[in-house]
Length: 214
Image (cartoon, rainbow, N blue to C red; front, side):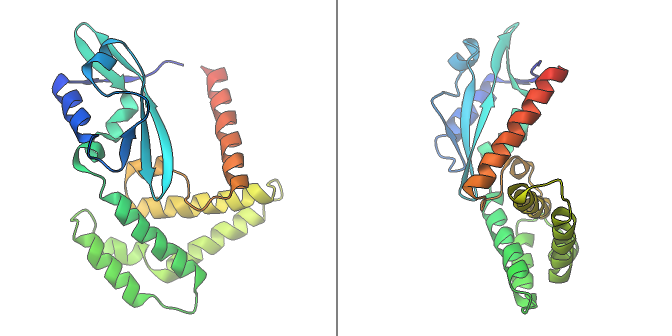
């Protein structure tokens, strides 16, 4: 399987190296983000922390014709590494709201919804009118019920696969509201050991199929 690369300047490498020393959401794991790493073509391993979940990210590096290159997917993470990831706190707030709305159907959550919208629009990255729709408790419950009925009506899935699929769809709904690409690479924070094992199995199978096709 051929890795796609993007060019990165010496200045960017140095800026990211400095940013990683203070960024709480990304930490180097047994590797360095510096010029020598690129010159030796070593992999760079980062641990990403989102909603109390650790995700390992591995990027290839190389130097060609005096230019520095890193795995193209790294481009998704540069801004958050350099500027800090405000969406980590946003994600936790939105996630808590979604779970509360689903767990307590007796509450209309109007006050909580307005408070959350007021917080999110302060970042200037969110539209209040769209949030009114996305955070509507009735919509959240209706979408969740549809997903539940579809998944638990599928006899081809076992118990663990069903619970995992439902949690993943809810996680995706939350990620879509937060609207941060990094989060789509993460798992739901409330997976059980059985669900983590099933997810690992699914990812391994998908990787094997991808390698067979390449």
